[in-house]
Image 1 (cartoon, helix red, strand yellow):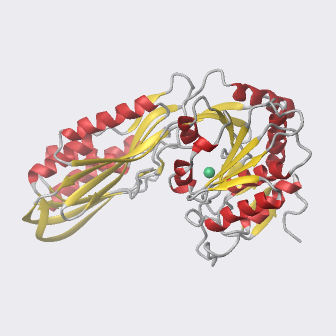
Image 2: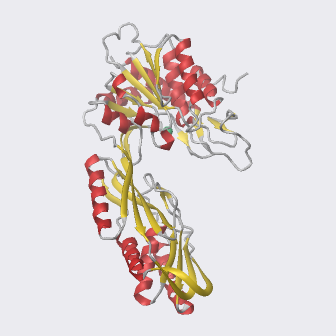
Amino acid sequence: MTKLYNLNPSNVFKYFEEICNIPHGSGNMDAISKYCVKFAEKHSLKFIRDDANNVIIFKPATAGYEKSEPVILQGHLDMVCQKTENSDIDFMNDGLNLYIDGDFVKAKNTTLGADNGIAVAMILAVLESDSLSHPEIQAVFTTDEEIGMIGAEKLDTGILTAKKMINLDAEEDDTVTVSCAGGSDFKAVISLNRVKKSGTKVTVTLKGLQGGHSGMEIDKGRVNADVLAGRFLNHMFAISEFDIIAINGGDKGNAIPNLCKMELCVNNADTFTKNAEMYLDILKKEMAEREKSFSPIIEIGEKAEYDILHPEIRDNIIFTLLCLPNGIVEMSAEIKGLVETSLNLGMLNTESDKMTLLFTLRSNKKSALRFLEEKLKTFFGAVPCKIYTSGHYPPWEFKENSKLQALYKEVYKKHCGFEPKVEAIHAGLECGIFTSAIKELDCIAVGPALYDVHTVNEKLCISSVEKIYNVLISLLENCK
Ligand SMILES: [Zn+2]
């Protein structure tokens, strides 16, 4: 007996369980892609599988809908693989161990991959059914979304003739998402010139900060450890002498660094430490409410000869860290509470001959994203360094007068008794790639309630699946 056999809608949960039995972490797409192909063959549906393992399945319109415009249903095939320390799962070969806990489905000691397996399951249930009414369905299953939307990027959207798309990769069942951010990575590499100097090594570590996601949590007032290091160094520079050996904080662009470690070389360790403690106390008081666990530490090391940064470079780096733009750049005028444009210094890394600064840039408007890149380029023009930009993905801009949005609201209200919230998010969705590739595409992103995605506590709300699936089939029925 399967574990989810008595859940409703039973066909959705049947497919969800099948998907969970197939290893499908990002980068491991062959088996799950084949599974979709087999499904299409079994149901005699036309399909395309491309080189990136994306699968598109076409289902003809049902009676009475022959003249209606086709609709894209879309979800991604890959999942984020996380496990607890005591789990011995092999994500390349093993399925998940599902269980039911009240109104939730969970996976024992691992992520559940309901992001985005439940979308795939709902779409397969629609494709399988012979009792639903709907226009032609173009079901698009993309690969490797979680590691940079690789499948969607490689997909030939010319195959798709639909001008309406329902993306099922949203995680709140009372919300319809109508816009998302685009973004890019920006890297500045400063060449280091080192000289020898004798002194005492003092290491200052700014730690205990909250960190967080650079898109979703950029408006939560969290302190960026690398930016704080710039403030600390600039203050200390005005009252005492020191040299820099290394500064390191954060390891990826899209996370707010919660720790920064500065290795300095000073002449008088006692005076320096006293001054540093005084200033760190001031910072602690100032940040007491926003960063409750901030706990900087100072360690005094050995008196010796060190390879320090040339003073000119030291000065450039302090200037850079103090003045670089970071955080929210602009709030949206169209959607209340939405961060429209932001950037995050996510990584500061020192090697013997170079220092690398890595930023993640985001905006829900293409032109604003471009402007932010220009601004950073100009800023770094004042510092001798090399600049690299990469990882561009387009935003999904808000569409006024969207028919699909209006229809979803109407259908949702009929089912639930109230209108869904309309929301834009300051993070990426594949909708950005589709709306920029397909002219005039009318798109919404919806989905059942998921909690703690990308963590071992991920859970899927069972009653929410039933609700959203019913809204979805009723929406399709109304796409005449
Ligand atoms: Zn997802």
